[in-house]
Length: 457
Ligand code: SAH
Ligand code: SF4
Ligand code: F3S
Image 1 (tube, rainbow, N blue to C red):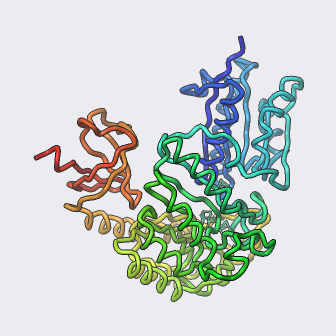
Image 2: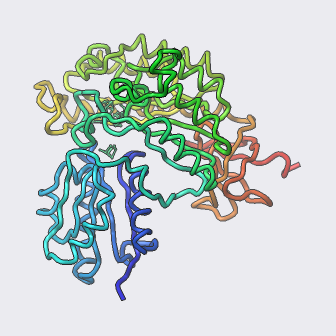
Image 3: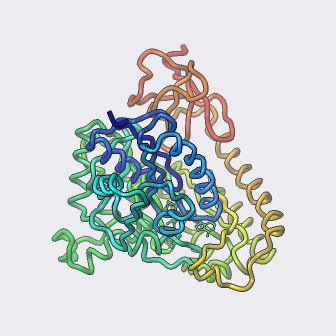
């Protein structure tokens, strides 16, 4: 009998995690069940990312690791989907001819057909579409964490940040209707989901295309409300019974509106957590990146967020070594980062992506210069996040339990409303999907340790 088990490895961002859960859902409807590793699985799916060059290299490295498995068992299906598949299509099949199916970012729902086709041909089945037929959220999902769900509110991106390859891989921005999103969230809540993360490349421009098409609730069409559609969406999902935590990613400083901060303050379920990508603290570089806010606006937004949303945790993305970045520009980034006092930050060395505007700029920054600047920024963001962690000591935080700690069987792990990982001793009632008030007793780089005072005393 055919081995109908699957193993999925996900690279890249939350969009891909969401897509992987949908791919798993599609496979389950075909009768597949999960396997613990690629060796034992009948189908191995890599959901790929192309955001930086090392993402490409990593994928090709791991893909070559599957070759001996395929040679040992030719009936094993190797499937590659997602952003790098969308970008490299033919090249991927050429580099790894033992792949059975290559699909892109717009056609995961076609997996059953593509797999069937692969059964009848000895070379890779490649199907890459330029446009989406349906939102991935319309597909069934097999969720990784039972009480958490990703919900896509828009796909694609209409911005033209000059370093970024995403718009060419995920297409123009297309928003889902509020009613459809609310319907999905209601179904998720009925299925035991308590926490949702709303996903879009630029959540603040959510719904602009719907407004253009006149496809919005009556109140908006008549201009009765003065909220943005994204703030309205937060209010709508915030009222759905059973949903205790709402997060969203990513907002864009250019389109960010105060009504979103007010929604974060006023809607109990919306978590006090904001991921706001800075990219650079130099106005000259922001202009060259086509990020049309400036550092003063960014810092102002951070100040407003801290004022309007008490105890908000702010994280960011920063790129070091964008073409033309001088020492002075870099120092601006250091200064703005320090002033913003980010609670955590993802820092990246600029990576040249063929086909983007920045890839053709002449003043590419030397690797040696990037290698010198990058650790200076990392040291700063590490210090800021240590300071932020230190401020949590002794505080009581609401933790939603996810499951046993991956490294210590006597501990359970969960997340705070700030989305910080917390480990706490296992105990009666501390089971996945339950909330506990946890006192933070120790901190480390990437997690906090705490206990439940009621159980300790
Ligand atoms: N849509 C999101 C970002 C998605 S990509 C937003 O605008 O906020 C996630 C992060 O990857 C970006 O914020 C950026 O910091 C980083 N990134 C994107 N392209 C990159 C490149 N070519 N080199 C280095 N980092 C990059
Ligand atoms: Fe890329 Fe900019 Fe769109 Fe984000 S907003 S996905 S960085 S083009
Ligand atoms: Fe995400 Fe990577 Fe694609 S960051 S959108 S998976 S290129």
